[in-house]
Amino acid sequence: MQSLLNKKIVLGISGGIAAYKTPELARLLMQEGASVQVVMTEAAHQFVTPVTMQAVTGNPVFTSQWDNSIANNMAHIELSRSADVILIAPTSADLMAKLSLGLADDLLSTLCLARDCPLLIAPAMNKQMWEHSATQRSVERLEQDGVGLLGPASGFQACGEVGMGRMLEPAEITEQVIAFFQKKVLLGKKIVITAGPTFEAIDPVRGITNHSSGKMGFAIAKAALEAGAQVHLIAGPCELPTPLEATGKITRTNVVSAKEMHAAALSEMDCDVFFAVAAVADWGIAKPAKEKIKRQGKEAPTIEFVANPDILQDVAKTAKNKGGKPLPYCVGFAAESSDLEKHADEKRKRKGIPMIVGNIGPDTFGSDLNQLLVIDDSGSKKLAKAEKLQLARQLIALVAKKI
Ligand code: C5P
Image 1: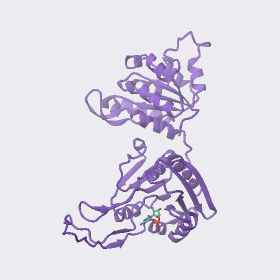
Image 2 (image 1 turned 30 degrees about the horizontal axis):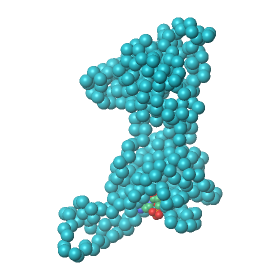
Image 3 (image 1 turned 45 degrees about the vertical axis):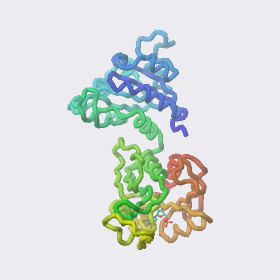
Image 4 (image 1 turned 60 degrees about the vertical axis):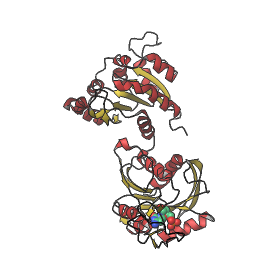
């Protein structure tokens, strides 16, 4: 799936060592289907060459406002008129100060002043420069002007110091540009999601779990963030990175057992939507052993199970009427081996939830693909086989209409 298909991006580069990552950024944006037109400041030439950027993007690179090879010599106007967004990465402290004051003394700054499209900037600078009150004034002004800030992150800096000011990684910037273009149907909403498997300990080294990869739940978290929501993700044991973490709009609680997931979910119920995507163990171990259970000849131990709490059902009971609608709006998932629609709908009614999503087909565990059957009071709707993120976006669009 290419999430930036037909998008035209003007990629600005200012002078900073992080510019060595910009060719990679251009490549990732293009892999997502965007066309990339590069504009560089003079200082940027010290870190990456126009030839490099031309070779990577396949487009001529603009470096000067005095370029008489352009027919009407109006690059500063033309470039933004045909762009969907201007993205500047890296954006130096100097350029941020200029943009915040509306200065326009080279092609990139003039282009930004003359633009009629949105502007996203990925700051990159030494931590003292970032923390300086002058730079923080620039940040404030730029945000007031509607400029989108991507990062910066905290971490190791080229100067040897550690702190705020690192440019986000190209993959993170690309994710945020993709998010920028998604419809903000959940703006101002809080979404809680359970994802992944649970693990029920038998003893300190053994336990019972399942094949859930967490991919569907994490995809829903990402799609909700892209739609403008604040997200809390409650994850069972899985290796997946927190989606769009650099936006600062997602928090995560890692849990192990179903009981821990239950407690974590119930403590987060002041939200608008609850997605129960986790594959929760139906039974926990009654008395997990404190020490590793030793082998005793050929005799197998007897393990006693106890029923785990039903997280979704208990959350559904907490729903309160807000503005005429019971919130949180609860969405469950169902994996059935037969009669999906019938069993899933029975489950929906039993758990007292307005919507349930059935996984169609047996190949969903661990896969990047899925196909879904969405069931609510009005009937059922099939979402055809697609990448989990694509399905998650469709699901978010459906749920957003309900709240
Ligand atoms: O009852 P069953 O496991 O088939 O239902 C699946 C749905 O219920 C999923 O949405 C799952 O996350 C949720 N669930 C839960 N707590 C449990 C068991 C299932 O939240 N203990």
